Image (cartoon, rainbow, N blue to C red; front, side, top):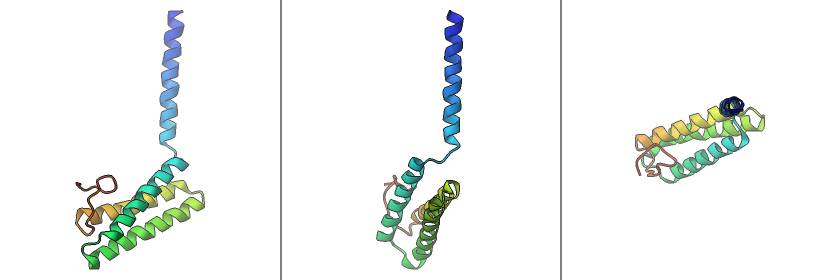
Length: 114
């Protein structure tokens, strides 16, 4: 009986681990919506806090284009490319924040110190 319990626990751990790994390979509606929300908030904050307009406009433009592409891909059901486009959009925003094109102090939305 002890052997059966140990075997059952091992199988459950394996099954749980496999389910977790499978979930890590997919982009769900919830995950995509979370990143749309975060990147959307970062876009808004960056637009409101431009410090060097002539350079920041280019970074904002690129971020907005990738954000728009992400929406397009999501509407087409292409979550992988939607997620990739969101990553690029946020990358442009983070880069702009790091080189102080955007005067943002929000470590939840950007890779900057508060």
